[in-house]
Length: 416
Image (cartoon, rainbow, N blue to C red; front, side, top):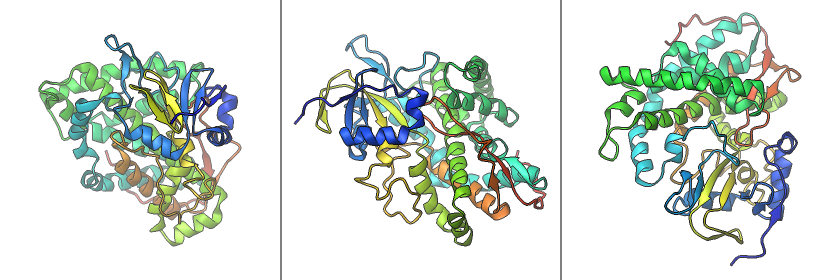
């Protein structure tokens, strides 16, 4: 049964609101886990139970994007309120129904544990090689020199894009996530996107002539719903996979290493008990919550958390709010690597649960293990560390200089 509408007036896109995102989520959740944002006219959902309910119910809360010319609904998609005008449709993440299921079946062979296990030696070699390039100097930027390039080269390998372009792609996608939309850095990155789309389509054409064992080859050679994918559909799927591969694991790993710099006791424990890194990964997924929000459109009247959500209303799920819900997590503000169970929603839940979750876990485990093994006494220059600004959907680290006692290079060659 619905109760009186819970409302609040806040600007979730403002730097002031984002600077205290945790406190704001907690205050809104305490008022109501489902609350109407008067200023931007959408429902903000912060309770763990309620966020999970939205994510599981694709029939009532769709990720679809576009104006509904037949049903009169304006579908917001997944990328926020207001949605950036320059943002294309986000492939599998904004597909619905059977098309979504077909795309997941197409991509699953590249994302499931057997494929991730096959790629792990590549990740280990890449991590060792990128560390080798700086370990003798005793200083590096942990983001630019390690946690950014390793996921980037793996993503290029999986998708079938040219390795020598990893930095160009990574810089463009990181800038759109890390800087406010009004900033010069964001605008410059947006101007690079048409060229990246052209490169993806050129590579797709070459894969049609000579397919390989990669995602792009599969996209251009397999029918979905009895027909080939169009160029726009190929770009939208690739956009989703590039963005996920080049940003989220970088942010997760960087934020975890930043936190470990402030917790020498926990760092020592992970060094002495390396098997705990798997469990630590789950806790850092919860605690960092780098994917903070996603949006949905309500397709029919639904009562959620005591609030009546009307057909056509926009809904923003706060993964951050859900992952810090004290009704589910004891001492949610603390990192507890012994937390069990740990029902975090960092990868989402339901039909749209992150398809790359096994890849992300493997990358995190390899990079953190190698850092703690080879440069265990690294120190973060906290004054020079810069975090994302002005993004209510994603959080991460732009730069994180570190110093450490110089070590010896392994001499391993590049993995590509």
